[in-house]
Length: 179
Image (cartoon, rainbow, N blue to C red):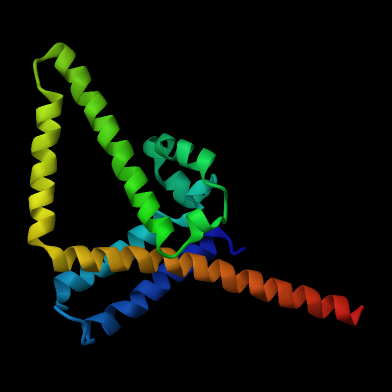
């Protein structure tokens, strides 16, 4: 399996190479903003929401004070399993997991504030959720590019692992047949 530095290098280089290609492409509704959303989601996926969050890895360490958020994920998701390294399911799971944990933490903080100063955590969360939903419904193309970038960032990691493992197997077999 490639090192964390190798994964980071691949993510950054492929993102940099892809940026001008995407801008010059015939993708639907492509413009500089949507291209940056695609590239930004790709980089965030590869550098922060990596499939290696199921380990004490470089992406895990990048979360610094929020690293505790990923402890349950590490406990329940086996490393290099189809759950974490799936091209589609892995990134979706990490985003949904992170969203749920952030929702729960926000709700707990609001409930704590409510104990000191009257604030309705349920209504506040409902208002925020309504505003987020309205924004999401108003910007489907941006969401599609963000989702595509996020999936591609996870895919770059998983495909690198697959290719690296294949090369190692082939190399081992070559050395065994020579011995």
